[in-house]
Image (cartoon, rainbow, N blue to C red):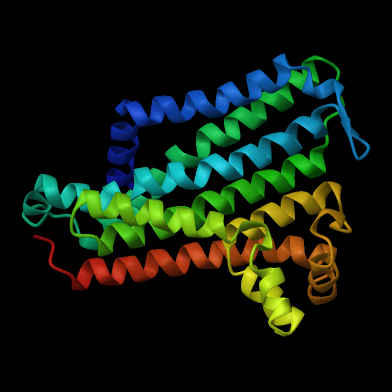
Length: 275
């Protein structure tokens, strides 16, 4: 455990010095600042006003930006260290491969999640100071949603990093994974599947294998419990899960997917050629 914490601490320190982390923090902090500057807390949508409106917009923007940031920066962890010759020194040090791999994940998770959460927390603090009603239920659920989103794509990124032999291959694979998930967003193929006489339950279940779709639908469910914006697909989702059931599924499934990806990446990392 001591080796794990030391590896995590080292990764955090290195990330804090990296330029990508400065840009990453600036992006999410800037989003909240711009939303306040544009007076979004004074607008109304589907009955939501004030900080609720800001959080709804913030979570939608985060879902577009966070995955690609996490994937591109994480895939450099294993592949980048392999190219830099770090493993040659690692094998000569009293640090186990498990402690190094999971320490990397732990340190990177802290670095990835902290700016996103602190930006949202800053919005809540500002709303409290400005005497704006705080939607604690939405804030708590969105915090959990962001936590599992970061964990999910972190696990996928570590898996890609363990598979790829070079940094260029790892970054290319990360971009392709993100692109495929975006192309399948908003149930794009749902209409085609149904026209092909595929059972609607099967079509929706296949669409919900996409973690981005799960995140977006769960965020919509907070201010649109009937999921009207999804059209007929909403009836299938609500029949399969129910509103509360789907919110729970949106937290469990991505967490399990991220953990499974990380475990598979660790297995391949241990079995593969470090040099």
